[in-house]
Image 1 (tube, rainbow, N blue to C red):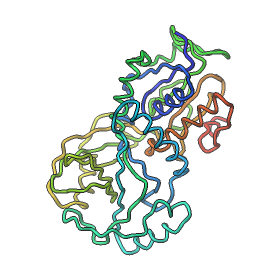
Image 2: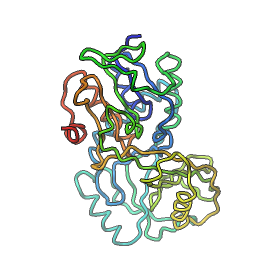
Image 3: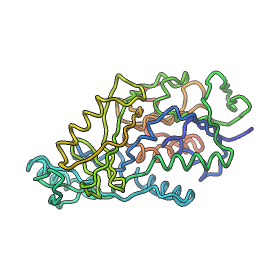
Image 4: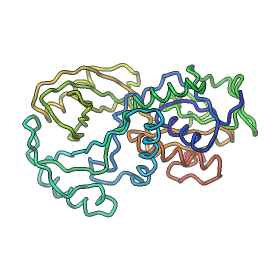
Length: 347
């Protein structure tokens, strides 16, 4: 088999890059063995504001301008509902936080996204005497549904190989890469936290962080917005809500833990006052980087080997943005932004 690209991994990063290849008429094959679960357990929020500090997310407008049309395109092609336009409300803990919000809403990068109106709390199930601030142009991508649908499409097109990628079988020359009976011009590794086991890119400073999420059934909560107050509370419909998320740097297993569950419920119980039942708990490993920027670029010695990784907690926003950069870097020799180029660590 001869293709233009081999892609390893089909989470948010892999899908984003595949969409660039589709748009530009490139052939490809994808390897995925479901060993990396950061995308499948992602909350999927796109939110252009750092709500802890009321600051703008890096390149938020540029990211959304690329990401949202891409998800709309996938929705249309796969005939799936993926993008849910859901407002994000930040609970205020004090009058001082209200004032900080007003100050932030006057800043050039934030005025588009922070509503200057304080929303009063009328929900008896939520303790919020100081009300909420609303973030505009927010929503949720149903990442799990997207990945399942995308993989089905790839399988039907004979473009998905559901097996582990064996690095020892990869051979690279200046002209091409070869993996068993597949020859390609380029290979892109989009493996998430699994990159730490990749002998070609394990020198990159990826900091895997385990995150756990709960799903609760709360019939009396009745909110149709994402609520941020210590935890995120994300409505799924049918009286179900995601509660997340935790950070764990030592235990990097995919096992769910009582410790994480208790930590999330402690914060949740300070936020809501109604009955609920925990119906599900999942764990995944986030691919985070110490400078909070993705890992994108070319191997320092093998010119046909590339990486697209380190999307962190805002993968649905930044994934399409850096995937487009990587494609233009490979195909058109356009320089990567210094903030994301792995040469910041490898040179």
